[in-house]
Image (cartoon, rainbow, N blue to C red; front, side, top):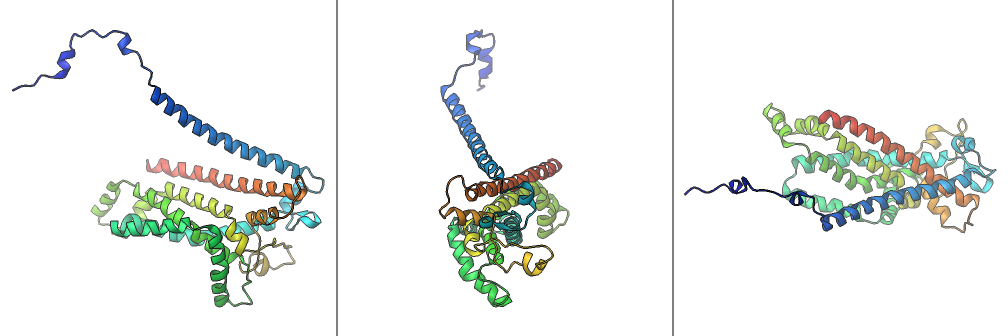
Length: 327
């Protein structure tokens, strides 16, 4: 028995102009307005934070005791005697973050490759929750782990006379452990998003699983992996409690030509204070509002903002470049 095409019933039917008019959908309009409001609040919050940060930092730089030349060239930060050279804090922050990257990037990327290309569903269901548990541990716990476990371990390996109780090496290593779940999770998502046809084509040409993973899948997901690395670096730079507990409670001031480059300035086994650690330490004291010490907190925060903003701008350029290649 033949069935009649429903479209034939509409042949010759007259459709009025009112029926073709767009009808308001209140539910979709409300949802669209709510989403726009969320985006607007996020943007306005960011603008407000930057405004307050810049306003308070400007008060610091307007002080007659501070000059931009001294701030960006001096290697001594001692607010008590009005020395405001940012380099000891910046160097400790960068040094700790570099150590963390040497720990987190290879381990996180290796974990992501294993979870995406090698692990079975059962293994993936076991390992991913464990990584999420690492990400959920409070950072103050990581700080005391660095102080009570990592530092004694380094002292037993390199000697108690060579490794101080507070040092940037143990803090950097533990910060790297902290951000491993971030690197592995974001990188695994990028690897998993690579079309399976690329893997099958590589297998068809005789490539091994390792060759396919390293020469096909990883380059195809390079933009996403780069984004994961930049987010992890920003997280390491902004980490506070670990470095405040384990790295040191005073800036590592130095003088070029007098202090040894590898014995003091670039020595990871001596105490140093990062930018975030310094903010925590001095803000916990009795600072009077609008004092030069109080305003210096915002100058350091502005410097951190500029560093992370620069990282994100460079990563966007890098990601867009390689995303165009693989599209």
